[in-house]
View 1: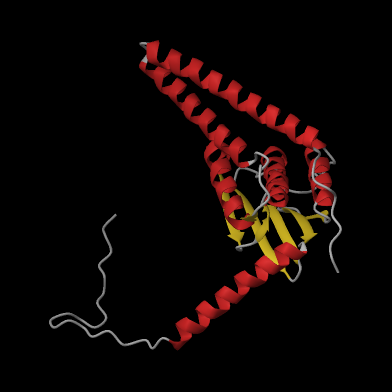
View 2 (view 1 turned 135 degrees about the vertical axis):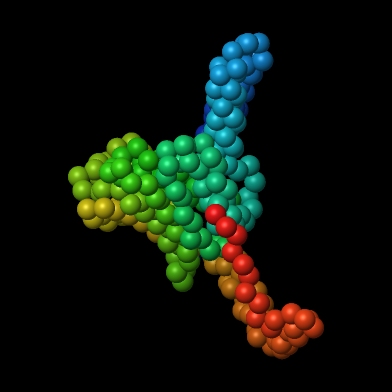
Length: 252
């Protein structure tokens, strides 16, 4: 049965988003130019290094913002690859600096570009929510993003290893995620324990997306059959060498 989904934003709304994105990038670029100018002219070595770090951080935030910019064309996008890019950018700009490790378990999953964008926005909000509210009790933080297809549905999970009891509050970020889930025709839920919290975002694939994902599965199946059909020839040891050499470990 075809999935009935909300209509995309009107032209006016898209124009306003484009203006907002353009303004944010320009303002960040202006700040980068100002800080770079100060870094060039200061004679203090430590100050120059710190200002250079600020410039690097601002560039990384621009990268995150660019990934989360609304797409301008109707195409199929690999949501798995998009979330990998987002995860790497978020790690560079905030997670690594807070000693929080990001783990990804992600399938190749073609989605329509605007729906992929909405998914990325939701994941960004959920990761940011974990960074702000999880209590890691002195141990290294860990956030895991899992994306997979289950039949005609998409399952996305964002789980952290921080204390979860008593910190699930319907703040603005979670309300945004809930609205994004509805706009995808899906739902958001959460579970938690004494040392973990997990948010789930589930939504159905459109007919176009189902067709594209079936094509991905078919390609994988053909590749797997070709690999199984290829005979594996045993490698011959070179004269003077052991068939199973022991590789010496470097001294620490």
